[in-house]
View (tube, rainbow, N blue to C red):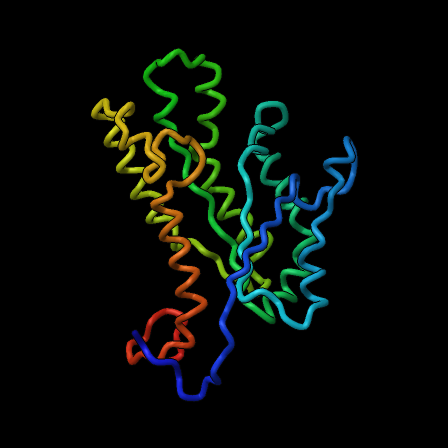
Length: 227
C-alpha cells in the first residue's frame, strides 16, 4: 500500500525466521539436577554473528512465585534478579545492535478458581498469590536489572491484556464461563495464566509494525517510523 523510502535499496525476498529459546530457571548453573544446569548461551552466539536478529523479545514465567509458600515474601523477586544477572551483559551488547524488548507478563485470571466447582480451597489460596505478584515482578525486574541496558520495556501489550481480562471477568460474572465464547481459543478466558489469542494477535502486529515502519514512506509520525 505504501512505497518504500527512495533511499532504501531493493531487497531480496525476506524470510521470517523465529527462534524460541526456552530456558528453565534462566541462567541457573548449579545443582540440584543436570536439567537445571543449562545456561543461556544464545545471546553470546548471536553476538559472534555478523547479522543479529531484527528484534529480540525476552520474557519470564511465573511459576517460581510459588517460592513464597516455602521461603519468604521477597524470595521470588530476589531469585529472579540473581538468575537474570548473568544475561545482562550480552543483552546490553545486543541492545547496541538491535532492538531488545523486555516483555511484560500476562495477567492472572483469578476468577476461574472462584465460586466452587470442586476446586480445593488450598489451591485457590495458593494460586491467588499470582494476582498481585505478576505486575510487581514486571516492575521490579525492569528497575533492578534491565533499566540501564539499552533495552526497551514492552508494556504496551498490558492494556490489551487487561481489556481481555475485563471481558472474561464480565462473562464469568454473568455465569457464562461454560459458554463456547468463554472457552474458545480466541478469548481463552478459562486459561488462568496465559494471554488470549486475541491479545497475542495484537502483540504480533506490534512486532511487525516495529520491524516494518522504518521502511515505509509515510508522512505521519508513527511509532518507530523514520518518515
